[in-house]
Length: 357
Ligand code: PHE
Image (cartoon, rainbow, N blue to C red; front, side, top):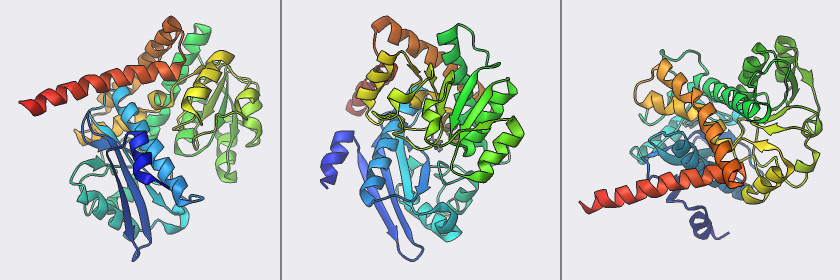
Protein backbone atom coordinates (compact mmCIF):
# COMPACT_ATOMS: atom_id res chain seq x y z
CA UNK A 1 0.00 0.00 0.00
CA UNK A 2 1.28 3.45 -0.97
CA UNK A 3 0.51 5.10 2.36
CA UNK A 4 1.89 8.57 1.65
CA UNK A 5 -0.18 8.82 -1.52
CA UNK A 6 -3.22 7.74 0.43
CA UNK A 7 -2.59 10.43 3.07
CA UNK A 8 -2.24 12.98 0.31
CA UNK A 9 -5.49 11.87 -1.29
CA UNK A 10 -7.38 12.32 1.97
CA UNK A 11 -5.64 15.65 2.62
CA UNK A 12 -3.82 14.63 5.81
CA UNK A 13 -1.04 16.59 7.44
CA UNK A 14 0.42 13.82 9.60
CA UNK A 15 -0.20 10.19 10.52
CA UNK A 16 1.59 8.60 13.48
CA UNK A 17 1.93 4.85 14.11
CA UNK A 18 2.50 3.92 17.75
CA UNK A 19 3.62 0.58 19.13
CA UNK A 20 4.34 -0.52 22.70
CA UNK A 21 4.79 -4.32 22.81
CA UNK A 22 5.14 -4.33 26.60
CA UNK A 23 1.47 -3.47 27.02
CA UNK A 24 0.22 -4.72 23.63
CA UNK A 25 -0.54 -1.26 22.26
CA UNK A 26 -0.94 -0.71 18.53
CA UNK A 27 -2.42 2.68 17.78
CA UNK A 28 -2.66 5.09 14.87
CA UNK A 29 -3.18 8.81 15.28
CA UNK A 30 -4.23 10.76 12.20
CA UNK A 31 -4.07 14.55 12.13
CA UNK A 32 -6.06 15.67 9.15
CA UNK A 33 -6.13 19.45 9.22
CA UNK A 34 -5.07 22.07 11.78
CA UNK A 35 -6.06 25.25 9.94
CA UNK A 36 -8.80 26.00 12.47
CA UNK A 37 -6.72 24.98 15.48
CA UNK A 38 -4.99 21.95 17.02
CA UNK A 39 -6.68 18.68 16.15
CA UNK A 40 -9.50 17.29 18.28
CA UNK A 41 -11.25 13.95 17.88
CA UNK A 42 -12.11 10.78 19.75
CA UNK A 43 -10.17 7.55 20.11
CA UNK A 44 -11.85 4.42 18.78
CA UNK A 45 -10.91 0.97 20.00
CA UNK A 46 -11.98 -2.09 18.05
CA UNK A 47 -10.76 -5.14 16.24
CA UNK A 48 -10.06 -4.64 12.55
CA UNK A 49 -10.01 -7.29 9.83
CA UNK A 50 -6.64 -5.94 8.67
CA UNK A 51 -4.17 -3.16 9.38
CA UNK A 52 -5.21 -1.50 6.15
CA UNK A 53 -8.80 -1.33 7.42
CA UNK A 54 -7.59 0.39 10.57
CA UNK A 55 -5.65 2.95 8.53
CA UNK A 56 -8.60 3.65 6.25
CA UNK A 57 -10.92 4.02 9.24
CA UNK A 58 -8.69 6.50 11.04
CA UNK A 59 -8.18 8.49 7.82
CA UNK A 60 -11.91 8.72 7.15
CA UNK A 61 -12.77 9.46 10.77
CA UNK A 62 -10.15 12.17 11.19
CA UNK A 63 -11.17 13.90 7.97
CA UNK A 64 -14.74 13.74 9.28
CA UNK A 65 -13.57 15.57 12.43
CA UNK A 66 -12.18 18.48 10.40
CA UNK A 67 -15.61 18.89 8.82
CA UNK A 68 -17.48 18.26 12.07
CA UNK A 69 -15.52 20.81 14.06
CA UNK A 70 -15.71 23.41 11.29
CA UNK A 71 -19.46 22.93 10.75
CA UNK A 72 -20.16 23.34 14.48
CA UNK A 73 -17.83 26.35 14.83
CA UNK A 74 -15.56 24.45 17.21
CA UNK A 75 -12.14 26.18 17.23
CA UNK A 76 -10.21 22.96 16.60
CA UNK A 77 -8.93 21.06 13.61
CA UNK A 78 -9.61 17.44 12.78
CA UNK A 79 -7.88 14.34 14.07
CA UNK A 80 -8.71 10.90 15.35
CA UNK A 81 -7.01 7.89 16.90
CA UNK A 82 -7.65 4.18 16.67
CA UNK A 83 -6.37 1.54 19.04
CA UNK A 84 -6.35 -1.89 17.45
CA UNK A 85 -7.80 -4.50 19.82
CA UNK A 86 -10.86 -5.84 21.54
CA UNK A 87 -11.86 -3.29 24.20
CA UNK A 88 -13.50 -5.92 26.40
CA UNK A 89 -10.25 -7.92 26.60
CA UNK A 90 -7.27 -5.73 25.67
CA UNK A 91 -8.14 -2.39 27.26
CA UNK A 92 -6.00 -2.25 30.41
CA UNK A 93 -4.93 0.71 32.56
CA UNK A 94 -1.33 0.10 31.37
CA UNK A 95 -2.39 0.24 27.73
CA UNK A 96 -4.23 3.53 28.28
CA UNK A 97 -1.25 4.94 30.17
CA UNK A 98 1.03 4.06 27.29
CA UNK A 99 -1.42 5.61 24.85
CA UNK A 100 -1.34 8.78 27.00
CA UNK A 101 2.45 8.94 26.66
CA UNK A 102 2.15 8.81 22.88
CA UNK A 103 -0.47 11.58 22.91
CA UNK A 104 1.93 13.65 25.01
CA UNK A 105 4.67 13.36 22.37
CA UNK A 106 2.46 15.53 20.14
CA UNK A 107 2.58 18.36 22.69
CA UNK A 108 -1.01 19.47 22.15
CA UNK A 109 -1.25 19.12 18.40
CA UNK A 110 -3.92 16.49 19.09
CA UNK A 111 -6.42 16.12 21.93
CA UNK A 112 -8.56 13.03 22.24
CA UNK A 113 -11.35 11.45 24.26
CA UNK A 114 -14.04 8.79 24.08
CA UNK A 115 -15.43 7.16 20.95
CA UNK A 116 -16.66 3.66 20.11
CA UNK A 117 -14.95 1.18 22.49
CA UNK A 118 -13.63 3.82 24.91
CA UNK A 119 -15.27 5.94 27.62
CA UNK A 120 -14.45 8.98 29.73
CA UNK A 121 -13.20 6.83 32.57
CA UNK A 122 -10.56 5.08 30.43
CA UNK A 123 -8.81 8.37 29.82
CA UNK A 124 -8.02 8.95 33.50
CA UNK A 125 -5.09 6.54 32.98
CA UNK A 126 -3.90 8.45 29.91
CA UNK A 127 -4.27 11.68 31.88
CA UNK A 128 -1.44 10.59 34.20
CA UNK A 129 0.92 11.35 31.31
CA UNK A 130 -0.77 14.06 29.29
CA UNK A 131 -3.22 16.92 29.72
CA UNK A 132 -4.44 16.45 26.14
CA UNK A 133 -7.26 14.01 26.85
CA UNK A 134 -10.89 14.46 27.82
CA UNK A 135 -11.74 12.60 30.97
CA UNK A 136 -14.50 12.58 33.53
CA UNK A 137 -14.96 15.74 35.58
CA UNK A 138 -17.25 16.48 38.46
CA UNK A 139 -19.01 19.27 36.62
CA UNK A 140 -20.23 16.77 34.03
CA UNK A 141 -23.87 15.81 34.44
CA UNK A 142 -23.33 12.07 34.01
CA UNK A 143 -20.35 9.71 33.73
CA UNK A 144 -21.26 9.41 30.08
CA UNK A 145 -21.46 13.07 29.23
CA UNK A 146 -19.82 13.09 25.80
CA UNK A 147 -22.07 10.44 24.26
CA UNK A 148 -25.09 11.89 26.04
CA UNK A 149 -24.48 15.15 24.19
CA UNK A 150 -24.00 13.31 20.91
CA UNK A 151 -27.36 11.61 21.47
CA UNK A 152 -29.05 14.87 22.43
CA UNK A 153 -27.72 16.53 19.26
CA UNK A 154 -28.98 13.64 17.13
CA UNK A 155 -32.37 13.98 18.80
CA UNK A 156 -32.47 17.72 17.97
CA UNK A 157 -31.28 16.92 14.44
CA UNK A 158 -34.07 14.39 13.94
CA UNK A 159 -36.54 17.09 14.99
CA UNK A 160 -35.06 19.46 12.37
CA UNK A 161 -35.51 16.75 9.72
CA UNK A 162 -39.13 16.18 10.76
CA UNK A 163 -39.73 19.91 10.52
CA UNK A 164 -38.26 19.97 7.03
CA UNK A 165 -40.22 16.97 5.74
CA UNK A 166 -43.53 17.21 7.62
CA UNK A 167 -43.59 20.89 8.65
CA UNK A 168 -43.92 19.77 12.30
CA UNK A 169 -41.07 18.63 14.52
CA UNK A 170 -43.06 16.63 17.05
CA UNK A 171 -41.91 13.05 17.62
CA UNK A 172 -45.24 11.95 19.01
CA UNK A 173 -46.20 8.67 17.27
CA UNK A 174 -43.39 8.98 14.73
CA UNK A 175 -41.70 5.68 13.98
CA UNK A 176 -37.91 5.71 14.34
CA UNK A 177 -35.72 2.72 13.43
CA UNK A 178 -32.58 2.86 15.57
CA UNK A 179 -29.55 0.85 14.45
CA UNK A 180 -26.98 0.33 17.21
CA UNK A 181 -27.67 0.48 20.95
CA UNK A 182 -24.32 1.57 22.35
CA UNK A 183 -23.78 4.72 24.39
CA UNK A 184 -25.31 7.00 21.73
CA UNK A 185 -28.07 4.65 20.51
CA UNK A 186 -29.33 3.94 24.02
CA UNK A 187 -29.47 7.58 25.09
CA UNK A 188 -31.10 8.55 21.81
CA UNK A 189 -33.86 5.96 22.39
CA UNK A 190 -34.45 7.56 25.77
CA UNK A 191 -34.89 11.09 24.31
CA UNK A 192 -37.10 9.83 21.49
CA UNK A 193 -39.38 7.70 23.62
CA UNK A 194 -39.80 10.49 26.15
CA UNK A 195 -41.46 12.49 23.38
CA UNK A 196 -43.75 9.65 22.31
CA UNK A 197 -41.84 8.11 19.39
CA UNK A 198 -42.34 4.44 18.55
CA UNK A 199 -39.00 2.64 18.40
CA UNK A 200 -37.83 -0.23 16.21
CA UNK A 201 -34.34 -1.29 17.25
CA UNK A 202 -31.53 -3.56 16.16
CA UNK A 203 -28.22 -4.38 17.78
CA UNK A 204 -25.68 -7.11 18.37
CA UNK A 205 -25.86 -7.44 22.15
CA UNK A 206 -28.79 -9.25 23.76
CA UNK A 207 -28.58 -7.31 27.04
CA UNK A 208 -28.63 -3.95 25.26
CA UNK A 209 -31.63 -4.91 23.12
CA UNK A 210 -33.56 -6.19 26.15
CA UNK A 211 -32.82 -3.00 28.02
CA UNK A 212 -34.47 -0.73 25.42
CA UNK A 213 -37.38 -3.17 25.01
CA UNK A 214 -38.02 -3.04 28.76
CA UNK A 215 -37.36 0.63 29.33
CA UNK A 216 -38.84 2.20 26.20
CA UNK A 217 -41.23 -0.40 24.86
CA UNK A 218 -39.08 -0.76 21.72
CA UNK A 219 -39.66 -3.57 19.22
CA UNK A 220 -36.73 -5.65 18.07
CA UNK A 221 -35.88 -5.98 14.38
CA UNK A 222 -33.14 -8.24 12.92
CA UNK A 223 -29.79 -6.65 12.06
CA UNK A 224 -30.45 -7.17 8.34
CA UNK A 225 -34.13 -6.18 8.49
CA UNK A 226 -33.57 -2.74 10.03
CA UNK A 227 -32.91 -1.17 6.60
CA UNK A 228 -36.23 -2.24 5.11
CA UNK A 229 -38.70 -1.52 7.92
CA UNK A 230 -41.40 1.03 7.26
CA UNK A 231 -40.58 4.08 9.37
CA UNK A 232 -40.38 7.87 9.34
CA UNK A 233 -36.73 8.02 10.37
CA UNK A 234 -33.88 5.54 9.99
CA UNK A 235 -31.21 6.38 12.57
CA UNK A 236 -27.79 4.70 12.16
CA UNK A 237 -25.76 4.78 15.38
CA UNK A 238 -23.14 2.09 14.90
CA UNK A 239 -20.29 1.64 12.42
CA UNK A 240 -19.94 3.56 9.14
CA UNK A 241 -20.41 2.75 5.44
CA UNK A 242 -23.81 1.13 6.05
CA UNK A 243 -25.55 3.11 3.29
CA UNK A 244 -24.43 1.59 0.02
CA UNK A 245 -25.68 0.05 -3.24
CA UNK A 246 -27.20 -2.89 -1.34
CA UNK A 247 -28.97 -1.09 1.47
CA UNK A 248 -30.26 2.12 -0.16
CA UNK A 249 -32.78 0.35 -2.45
CA UNK A 250 -34.22 -1.36 0.66
CA UNK A 251 -35.01 1.83 2.58
CA UNK A 252 -38.63 2.71 3.32
CA UNK A 253 -38.03 5.85 5.34
CA UNK A 254 -38.33 9.56 4.64
CA UNK A 255 -35.36 10.63 6.72
CA UNK A 256 -31.87 9.37 7.61
CA UNK A 257 -30.50 10.93 10.75
CA UNK A 258 -28.15 9.26 13.21
CA UNK A 259 -25.00 9.46 15.29
CA UNK A 260 -22.73 7.17 13.26
CA UNK A 261 -19.73 8.59 11.40
CA UNK A 262 -19.07 8.11 7.67
CA UNK A 263 -22.49 6.60 7.05
CA UNK A 264 -22.25 6.81 3.25
CA UNK A 265 -19.94 4.19 1.74
CA UNK A 266 -19.27 6.48 -1.21
CA UNK A 267 -19.89 10.08 -0.18
CA UNK A 268 -20.61 11.47 -3.63
CA UNK A 269 -22.47 8.61 -5.22
CA UNK A 270 -24.70 7.69 -2.29
CA UNK A 271 -25.46 11.29 -1.38
CA UNK A 272 -26.85 11.79 -4.90
CA UNK A 273 -28.69 8.48 -4.78
CA UNK A 274 -30.53 9.38 -1.57
CA UNK A 275 -31.33 12.83 -2.91
CA UNK A 276 -32.83 11.36 -6.07
CA UNK A 277 -34.87 8.88 -4.02
CA UNK A 278 -36.35 11.84 -2.12
CA UNK A 279 -34.92 10.68 1.23
CA UNK A 280 -33.71 13.53 3.42
CA UNK A 281 -30.16 12.80 4.63
CA UNK A 282 -28.85 14.71 7.65
CA UNK A 283 -25.08 14.94 6.98
CA UNK A 284 -23.44 12.72 9.63
CA UNK A 285 -20.78 15.13 10.81
CA UNK A 286 -23.34 17.89 11.31
CA UNK A 287 -25.94 15.92 13.26
CA UNK A 288 -23.46 14.00 15.43
CA UNK A 289 -21.37 16.98 16.60
CA UNK A 290 -22.84 17.09 20.14
CA UNK A 291 -20.01 15.07 21.70
CA UNK A 292 -17.35 17.13 19.98
CA UNK A 293 -19.05 20.32 21.18
CA UNK A 294 -19.03 19.02 24.76
CA UNK A 295 -15.41 17.85 24.45
CA UNK A 296 -14.24 21.24 23.14
CA UNK A 297 -16.15 23.03 25.89
CA UNK A 298 -14.42 20.89 28.47
CA UNK A 299 -11.10 22.18 27.22
CA UNK A 300 -12.13 25.79 27.81
CA UNK A 301 -13.95 25.22 31.12
CA UNK A 302 -17.14 23.21 30.85
CA UNK A 303 -20.41 25.11 31.32
CA UNK A 304 -23.53 23.04 30.93
CA UNK A 305 -25.71 25.90 29.62
CA UNK A 306 -23.17 26.84 26.94
CA UNK A 307 -22.89 23.25 25.76
CA UNK A 308 -26.66 22.82 25.61
CA UNK A 309 -27.08 26.03 23.62
CA UNK A 310 -24.47 25.00 21.06
CA UNK A 311 -25.85 21.49 20.74
CA UNK A 312 -29.38 22.91 20.33
CA UNK A 313 -28.03 24.90 17.41
CA UNK A 314 -27.52 21.68 15.38
CA UNK A 315 -31.24 22.07 14.65
CA UNK A 316 -30.69 25.44 12.94
CA UNK A 317 -27.52 24.39 11.15
CA UNK A 318 -29.34 21.46 9.58
CA UNK A 319 -32.28 23.62 8.49
CA UNK A 320 -29.80 26.01 6.89
CA UNK A 321 -28.14 23.13 4.99
CA UNK A 322 -31.52 21.79 3.89
CA UNK A 323 -32.50 25.17 2.53
CA UNK A 324 -29.21 25.52 0.60
CA UNK A 325 -29.78 22.00 -0.75
CA UNK A 326 -33.27 22.89 -1.91
CA UNK A 327 -32.34 26.30 -3.31
CA UNK A 328 -29.31 25.01 -5.20
CA UNK A 329 -30.85 21.65 -6.08
CA UNK A 330 -27.87 19.85 -4.61
CA UNK A 331 -27.71 16.83 -2.24
CA UNK A 332 -27.45 17.64 1.45
CA UNK A 333 -24.00 16.17 2.16
CA UNK A 334 -22.56 18.16 -0.70
CA UNK A 335 -24.30 21.32 0.51
CA UNK A 336 -22.70 20.82 3.94
CA UNK A 337 -19.26 20.17 2.41
CA UNK A 338 -19.43 23.38 0.38
CA UNK A 339 -20.32 25.34 3.52
CA UNK A 340 -17.39 23.84 5.45
CA UNK A 341 -14.86 24.13 2.65
CA UNK A 342 -15.68 27.83 2.35
CA UNK A 343 -14.94 28.26 6.07
CA UNK A 344 -11.66 26.34 5.78
CA UNK A 345 -10.58 28.39 2.80
CA UNK A 346 -11.23 31.64 4.63
CA UNK A 347 -9.31 30.41 7.68
CA UNK A 348 -6.40 29.29 5.52
CA UNK A 349 -6.18 32.72 3.90
CA UNK A 350 -6.24 34.42 7.28
CA UNK A 351 -3.53 32.12 8.57
CA UNK A 352 -1.40 32.88 5.55
CA UNK A 353 -1.69 36.56 6.39
CA UNK A 354 -0.84 35.88 10.00
CA UNK A 355 2.30 34.04 8.98
CA UNK A 356 3.37 36.92 6.73
CA UNK A 357 3.24 39.48 9.54
N1 PHE B 1 -15.95 10.60 19.55
C1 PHE B 1 -16.94 11.62 19.37
C2 PHE B 1 -16.78 12.23 17.98
O1 PHE B 1 -15.93 11.82 17.24
C3 PHE B 1 -16.90 12.67 20.46
C4 PHE B 1 -15.57 13.33 20.70
C5 PHE B 1 -15.18 14.40 19.91
C6 PHE B 1 -14.72 12.90 21.71
C7 PHE B 1 -13.96 15.05 20.14
C8 PHE B 1 -13.50 13.53 21.92
C9 PHE B 1 -13.11 14.58 21.14
O2 PHE B 1 -17.50 13.11 17.60
